[in-house]
Image (tube, rainbow, N blue to C red; front, side):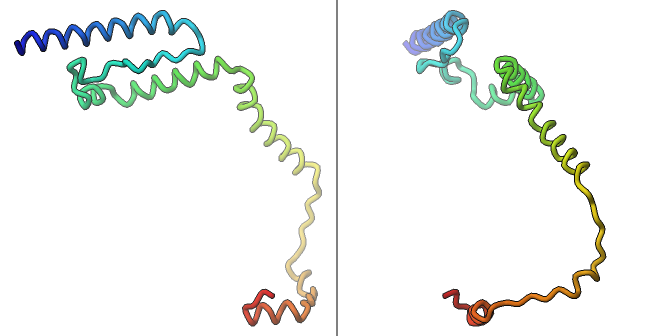
Length: 133
């Protein structure tokens, strides 16, 4: 009886996997629809330990998959990709243009020794007392 139960569970898991693959091939070809359904197959249903499944994928494989996903994302939105590249270049060019058009005048520090500042009495009293009334 336990063997029959295990066989039934295994057949159900295989059927869910096949159903999910069929849905992904039919729905995946249509843009804009989400291929993740609520009846997704978990690691327990397939008989694969979740720790074993996650540790079998190397970091470089995940990095490659992420880079490929980002590349496809950039291809799908060419206008955004264009502005992501051009905007920093344009900002740097504006800064260089502003620097080249400005006149730089070097001034010694002794020029500022003769500056006198007058501070109204109300401001200095509030700063000394700690009251900001």
